[in-house]
Amino acid sequence: MQEYWIVDLENQAVEAFWLKDYKYELIACAAQGDKNVFSKVLQGFEVTLAEIFETYKLKVAILKYNGGNIQSVIFALNRLGIEPMVTDNAEEIASADKIIFPGVGEASSCMSSLKSSGLDLLIPTLSQPLLGICVGLQLMCNYSEEGQTKGLGIFNTAVKKFIAPRHLLPENETIKIPQMGWNTIFDLQTPLFQGIDEQSYIYYVHSYYAEVNGETIAKTHYTLDYAAAMHNKNFYAVQFHTEKSSKVGEQIVENFLKYC
Image 1: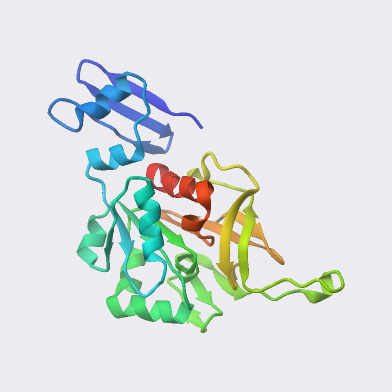
Image 2: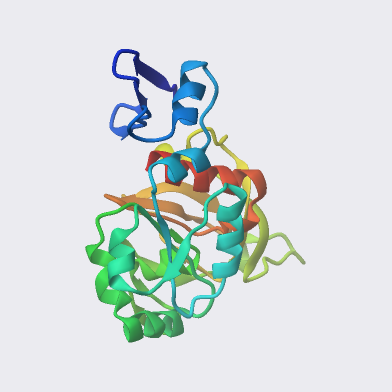
């Protein structure tokens, strides 16, 4: 996938088209935007994600609820030069350009926390790009076996508990549940995985998985193939922990902010 720069010298404007259907406009001129960004583009230098967000005052919101790993996600965004807001306020969430829905914990407890602030009703109505992480992905499904939890219904699939198929394993070999550690992703689709190699390693900690379905955009194998990532309209979600997945996880978050 290539970047295409269109430079209008007369009006001192720049537009960047990363993908045919995923356009990000960068306009930098004397009266609008950042002259330094414009100058760098004209000279052929790369414009960083942080510069784009600062220049155009783009906002990233992390949904605030009793869902665990918010601080780790903040640190991951900080490494990209992004300072997110953490909020459960509907107006602040509506004003954000990108939204991240993290999660660590038990599904029914997390859903109860969403309901207490009304986020369970707000999230499905959002029109901005949203990225669910780990339990965030599971809560975006129709239903989870964990705590017999009704989900948000964004992804048309169910979340089930891993069952180790002992009859399929060699003698004296076991599969541990939860899956905890590094595993690979494959069958990668959409700009979320721009620049990510097939069979890249990412980090997991989970006992429940989303079944493969028509909205699956990446898979992982652990006792069976399951949905490592999904996409439906403006909603994206990954089962693995991007913030713990080293450079691959960082690239996926940057892709979400830049391309989705």
